[in-house]
Amino acid sequence: MTEQIAAVAGPDVDSAEWLRVLAGTGPQREEGLARLHALLLRIARAEVARRGPRLRLTGPELDDLAYQAAADALIAITSKLGQFRGESRFTTWAYKFVIFEVSTKIGRHFWRHPSVPFDAEDWERLPDRFGFDPAREAEWRDLVAALRRAVDEELTMRQRRVFVAIVLNSVPLDALVIELASNRNAIYKTLFDARRKLRAALAANGYIGDDGWRRQ
Amino acid sequence: MNGWSALERFLRTDPSDVGCAEAMELLDIYAELAAAGAPVEERYPGVAAHLRACGPCGQDFEGLLAALRGEAH
Image (cartoon, rainbow over the protein chains, first blue to last red):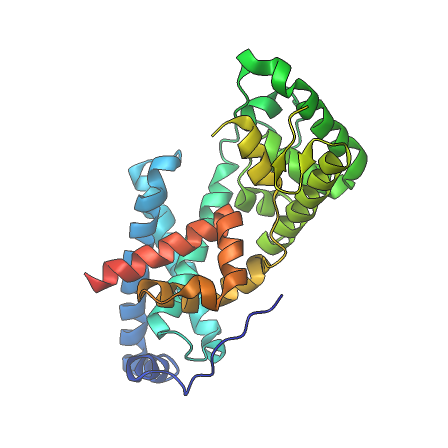
């Protein structure tokens, strides 16, 4: 499905000025690049601080990550200036690049201290991953067994690999992108198709109806 | 949330979900409209569906929105 963007007349005045300066040469461009880098660094620092509590990263590592993200975003932005169409403000478009760079670098960082190999298949983790109460195992045992059977029988090798990494082993999607030398869209689509197949298999076996679970 | 609803939520897919590539392409436009209080989920329902389902893209959206709101203060 593709969503349409409203037609725009062109960049606003501030955005046009950014484009003029960055597409130019000499000291004015250098000053523009320095100004943009400072903006990107501020956004990167704010973003790593926002995500920091959920990461196993210390203060200096967070700042290093922010510097790297700002530097790489600056390179990406200057090489893609021709792709800016003025549908948002230039700075918003630029911030998007630095946010993506922060995500990529956090994904890479995951593999410095992985808690478990991405392809380890410990199915005992499955109930815990979805928060099933061990004290009520009699209620969910059949469902979890059916889910595992559907993973075995319905998924392709690639779908199974992605399911195991993300669901059983809690590997972040952006970290798996790096491990499998893929991209976010491809991994998401693989998992999306796996989810659809698993739901259909559980429905075919009477575990789920159109609007929710049918307890067995 | 119990295990049943967590699993049900995980397995539920929305056919209008545009996927990561298109959501990332539109993220700056979407975030700017959202920051301005526009009815962005109605304007871009497929992006909205994707951001609800995809953790990483949802995180990026929250980050971009935070950047825009921080800029306004």
